[in-house]
Image 1 (spheres, helix red, strand yellow):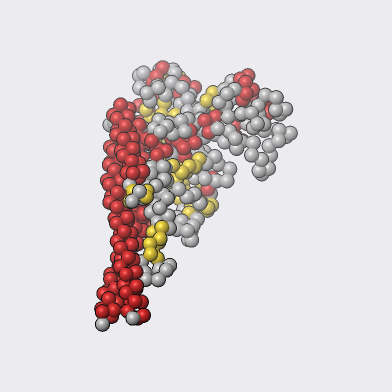
Image 2: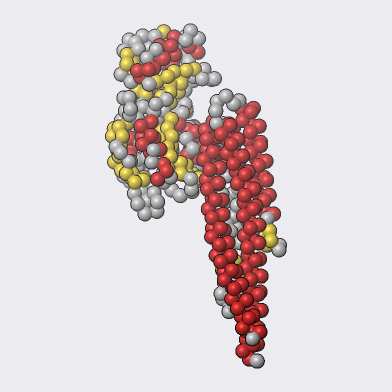
Length: 483
């Protein structure tokens, strides 16, 4: 009788273990089906972002697309917040290491974890944009620990104004290895006037990228098209195309990604910052996770990622792309690649440094009453200040100012990016660059859900195999009991 009682108890326990396993499968299948709907939503978000990522769209139509995306994100969050089993939330991020007893003896369990799927928890994408490059040279670019262990060394690239060089060539080198490294690159090489074009004359030796253009007389707004036509007449050789933007400012663009070098004089009416006469652009990197992109190599200052460069970096979730992008995030995405500049008169520098929004806030060491006279020290010269200008190039800092090479002082750490020319940008897909960023973020979110579903699939297989095994065991135990 004792043996029969033991076998009966084991059979009953195995029966309950099978029931527990089926509950586990029900939970996992419920979560999986909900995430399948979320994936369909993310596919739609990416499609709409792709639709917005072309300049045939107007601000109005892009705003309408963004409104659609906002509603889709709300639905995605509704699914995440309402999917439950027996009153237990499944996709909120709280379903962690949940145990299911699936054996006849205690602690014979299977553990399951389901990651959070709200828009604030998925899509975390890393954006990094280097400082503007103002000198040419050879670059050897290396990604550190790209897979968590190994480094990846790219082929050497020359940054210059010649054909087949520049950030375009470096971006091509990075992108052709993106499947392995997970890092993709874009570039922006643009030089923009700081104000609407006024009448002026270029010098006889005016040239772009070594190609002589010569003397050109142009009118306000380049209304006669003389300046743009002269520059574009040699664009196939220089790689530089000119246009007048909606604000009447001159815009020089390098589609191939080689540098833009202006020699001679383009004339004061073009309002080109003297610090922008040689411009090799900015390189932007994106990675479909929130981890830092670690870079090493030689000649990194020629990529804008050197130790002394002003590098913008941010990790952005799907939900963060929904609202206004602050200046730091926008600059990390590469919005600040077009340099307008801010003109300051010498007599106003001191006042500017004390004004609200300048970035020189109280406590930074620059505010009124701080006891530091940096505004007086730095007011000796005036220049067009922009996001791409290095502080050390803007100001000739004298001995006694508290700044020295290699001092590792962080006086500039508290300065706002907006003080250097970057600015907030409108939400999501309402701009071309924003639409590109949302495409990246949506792709990351899709990858995140695929990873969670893969984990669920593994646990489902484990539970199913265990149920099949203990079902056979239960049958055999019952047969033994009945004998």
